[in-house]
Amino acid sequence: MSTQEELPYDVYQDRCPTRLVLDRLADKWALLILDRLKDGPVRFNSLKRDIMRITPKVLSETLRKLERDGLIARAVFATVPVTVEYSLSPLGDTLTDTVSALAHWAERNMDAVLAAQAAYDAAITAAAIPTPGLHRLR
Amino acid sequence: MSTQEELPYDVYQDRCPTRLVLDRLADKWALLILDRLKDGPVRFNSLKRDIMRITPKVLSETLRKLERDGLIARAVFATVPVTVEYSLSPLGDTLTDTVSALAHWAERNMDAVLAAQAAYDAAITAAAIPTPGLHRLR
DNA sequence: AATGGCAGTTACCTCCAGGTAACCAGGTTA
DNA sequence: TAACCTGGTTACCTGGAGGTAACTGCCATT
Image (cartoon, rainbow over all chains, first blue to last red; front, side, top):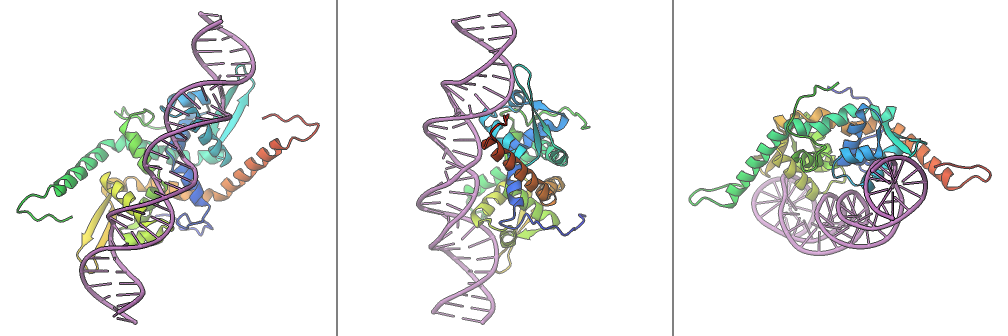
């Protein structure tokens, strides 16, 4: 399915720098921010309002990390009060379809996940209360 | 771009159950495990060997969470010694292209990220050591 | 004079994810 | 008899991510 090119990096390897990037991407807040920037530049406080429960501290930190990795760009406008816009860089843009798909997969499949959790928990509970005369494995 | 269906869930909302699922998916180890299962069932110790630096504890915990969410299936075979195979569930299968793309994006774009980091750090260092006679904004 | 919007920063603290390392049982091989 | 395979579990501990809440400075509005 995938074209097996020979890349110098392997995310399965310990000590591979890609692990650090994966760690950055494997972050709830980073995914939501990138998804939110998909449709154009957004200001700090707008992000803060849209991504509910994110704190200014975490938002600021996450934005800086994403900027450092070259995924987003920060633009300051000398308006009054000052305006700061965050937008996807060309590099970040190569990522957003994927990020977006991941971030919204849960919305599309939440019911299936909830059902699976309920089934799993029911099975565990059933196993924890052994029915007399019935030998339970697991 | 995206078909705007009306879904009962919104991952931007605090208190939405999708946030919990996003948190599960936004995990380095979970992403690597799902990616590894893409090509068929894999045994516990095989996963442990392939995903370097993962500890049996974290592997076991992550597998259980993914199983609870219905993303993977656990099959025990009464061989000797016992064989346990983990595989993608149909639900998990709907996710792997996305997960795989995310996990391997870093491999394809690592050089760009490293360059961006170097540029960012250089700019910060330059700003921290102000050139005399030159007024630096930031 | 007080409140609110802008874009953050700072100090403080807590909690638990995840690491370390040993250990379990049962069976096979050297 | 000792080591190694299978698939994990357990106890213990620490670092640092991330939460809380207050605060900055500047300006406009009420």
